[in-house]
Amino acid sequence: MAESFVLNTGARIPSVGLGTWQIEPEAVCSAVYAAVKAGYRHIDSAVAYRNQKEVGLALKKLFEDGVVKREELFITSKLWPGNHAPEDVEEDICSALEDLQLDYVDLYLIHGPIRIKKGTMFIPENLMRTDIPATWGAMEKLYDSGKARAIGVSNFSCKKVEDLLAIARVPPAVNQVECHSVWQQAKLRKLCQSTGIHLSAYSPLGSPGSPGYCGPSVLSNPIVISLAKKLQKTPAQVALRWGLQMGQSVIPKSANETRIKENFDIFEWFIPEDLMPEFNGIKQVRLLKAEFVVHPQSGYNSLEDLWDGEVEQEAGRAECEEYSDFLRCFSSAVET
Ligand SMILES: NC(=O)c1ccc[n+]([C@@H]2O[C@H](COP(=O)([O-])OP(=O)(O)OC[C@H]3O[C@@H](n4cnc5c(N)ncnc54)[C@H](OP(=O)(O)O)[C@@H]3O)[C@@H](O)[C@H]2O)c1
Image (tube, rainbow, N blue to C red; front, side):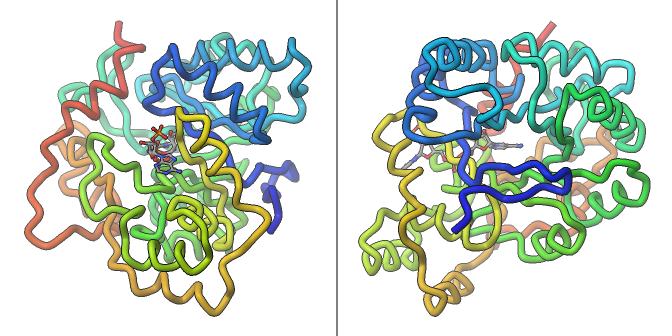
């Protein structure tokens, strides 16, 4: 299995990256350092994760210690939802670059088809309608300037990808979306493959225990567990290896050095082709539905509207109660 995938820019994205959401600022430096020492060359960050400065400190130390050179790493960051206005996009990346202590990022993503008023907290009352064509025009300028060596989107449905492709001068290189064996994104993967967009899988372990995630567990799924037993691997390794074999990069988060290493030990073996169809038997549920975005000000009147129909819910499941926690762990670094 390739250790990287080629983007439509010609650059390569390493197939396993370290996710950094919900790693405490004081822990993220050692997690990033340990990951790169273990062989990771891809780090997924965002200002919304409230630890981007500390990710930058880790990168600086890695370069100073001679562990790795800048050009060997693939660093992703994301546009803050309050900075969608075209005139704010360049300042947004400049601030991310300052945090990361870098001259460029390898990938800059529109974090989602979700916008809030500039300078406000990420709460439903501050939502507003997106204007993706205008924001994308400013993202294209970042690509032209070299500050972002690739640009892309996150949390875009098939329809939103198609709408973007219809107006883009620079097509998105990546769509980073929730993807794991419990939400496999078959339709979106097919569209991305046919349009040259790389699908990058966030929450590839199903984000166990995270606020805002509701539904069945990936790591305790009986099919995943039985394959792990058969292959003498852990459920996490099977979940991640499934992603690689489906042609997507995976960005598992861990703050624990043993699990960071475990999650990278997925190259020297594979899930036999005849066992892959077993994943087809897993009931599909989107775990991060983002109900809080359904609001008169966002222009999304329902989850169907937000995800353009690409949402399956557990029958009878009520709205997730943990959204206030989700919003809390996503926003306070950029409140003004
Ligand atoms: N673009 C977006 O909107 C978006 C949304 C969500 C996530 N992301 C990105 O994707 C990354 C990954 O997603 P995620 O953080 O939601 O979830 P995830 O990677 O699916 O799961 C992370 C959780 O799994 C645990 N874990 C890690 N390795 C494990 C292993 N080998 N065995 C058992 N448990 C393990 C972690 O705990 P420990 O830390 O204790 O190991 C943590 O609780 C994020 O960190 C972020 O960078 C992007």
